[in-house]
Image (cartoon, rainbow, N blue to C red; front, top):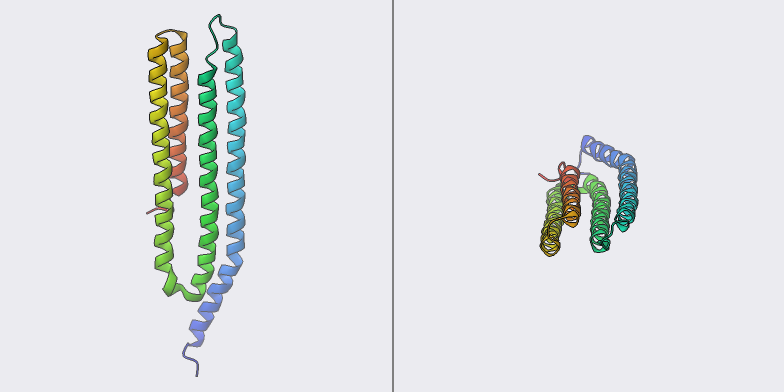
Length: 190
């Protein structure tokens, strides 16, 4: 004789059917949002390159040599930040796929995996966010060091204003990325 009641079998079937219905929609949504974010980051990279190019052209008209090193450094910093953010987005997509797979498994065996999967997912996201924040903090420190050294070497004047502008821009970008990390992971991390 079967040991499960009709109502428990029905609940398990309904849970599995519900999971099978919503999981593909969820994964499609996550993938689309990730692609939207990546496209936005590509647009940011293009716009940044355009601005850097414009600044290079503007400074080439001055009688002093153009500080291309700073513009190249800013371009590399933005590119690195964008690639880091894209990696984070890919990680979120991968984690979402893992969560969807876990949700399907949970419909079959909720009591065995729910606690472990939730804590593993939270730990992964927490570690990932911590690692990305440390990388951003390191980038901020490096930017500050490079800018301070450059200002000492070049002294006061137009170059110092340029360096300050680059430093403020880099700091703004880093803080924006930290905010984005907190905003995108806030609901997932307790």
